[in-house]
Amino acid sequence: MNHPRIDKPTEILLPVNPLFVAGTLAVAFVLNLLPASGQLLLWRPDFVAVVLAYWLIHYPRRLGFLLPWLLGLAMDVAEGALFGQYALGYTALALMAALAHRRVLMFDILSQTIHVLVMLQVVKLIMLLVRMAEGAEFPGWLYFLGPVTAAMLWPLLSVTLVIPQKPKSDADHA
Amino acid sequence: MDDQPPPFFERGPSPLARFTFFALLSIALLFADARLRYLEHIRQAVSVALFPLERAALAPGAALLRLAAFFTDQSRLIQENESLRLKSLELSSKAARVDALTAESAQLRRLLSASQRGELTLQLGEIVYAKRDPFTRRVVVDRGSQHGVTIGQAVIDESGLIGQVTRVLPLASEVTLVTDKNQAVPVQNLRTGARSVVFGVGRDDTLELRFMPVNADIQVGDKLVTSGIDGLYPAGFPVATVAAVDRSATNAFANIDCAPAAGVNRGSLVLLVLEKRTLPEKPRDEEPVTRPAKSKKKAP
Image 1: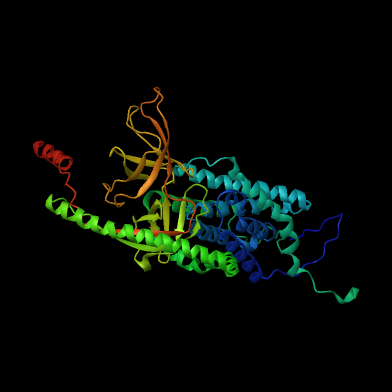
Image 2: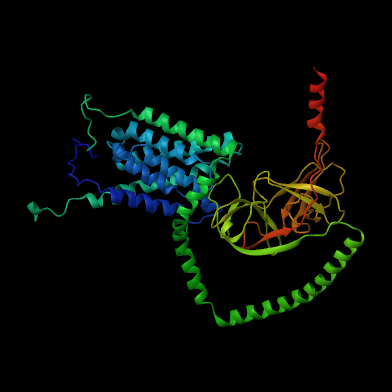
């Protein structure tokens, strides 16, 4: 991660703790389970998708495809969705991250957010197509509101999720 | 860590290949779930594993509610207690009459040798949360197969039918609300006795009475109750009130919108109804089976 940029020096980060990755994904999962209804349902971001996008973009070869797929299956059960709906969506997210992670991380936070927004909308669109193939009606354009709030979490995640990897106050500059 | 290794290192299948594999797996699952309904056991197993997580997600809200309840002032509690006591008095006097009427009705049915109405067993459940799937109208109730819930049970609240149990998990069950798209409930018009079927349209607070001729005797304000002829919903629970009737001559059928009687997406306490009744055996439809058999006999 953090490919060296010419204009800005980057600090060397500690390796990521797999337990921390698992923990953040678990927290995101519980956040997804929070009860919501009505208008809130439309605004509600898919926390798992955006946290997954963070780890997939920063460590695409660590997470692979199996973990997103299994997380998707768990979401399918939790949401009462069709088996495979979220799994397919998150797998597509993993592919987009695998193809675009180098490019995305070269941008500043705002452009990164826009990239992530597009990815999350594609995930949402895939799920919509799955449901419409099964016979559901188009739920209205507000359906695409969730990824917008989810993408807004990206800058926050970019700042917070990297904290455990910051090197301890180094003795050189003390 | 993710720097490109030189191409002579083994990297496993390409992302596209992996994606194709998992996408095909997902599509196979989708097909198995939507068309064949093979995966209910797996779903049940996963749901049990997820149960503690779901509870954990609900805990903060529940704790807040409990805290709020702790600070409810006493005068309001006394007032509420008073009104509830009055209501219980009123209801118990009504119930006494209902008991007498039920006995009378059973006797009359015996005299007419009509089939007896089944006995209802009620089970109290609480709506834990609404399903967060924007495509469906479903809620989850905290009673499951461990508590004896079976698939197909009617679910009511104090003012009428709210839905039907459509998926039973060990510790919870999913209730499809009457407002879910294409959820059908056989109903009877209380005023005229005419039977029909009311459908959900996928919107809250709207039901649709379909396939009623333009000249059907339907008025705004007509009350629709379950007819009980489906052998699924017990007869006599309020379902909806006719809200608007549009008899335009351009359509073969009248457009009839109804408002659900029960607080389909309000309230949290529900009753799961189980009717014990012995339905007469379905008449065997032998005709379509025997005909081809006969033709086969003729053939040789």
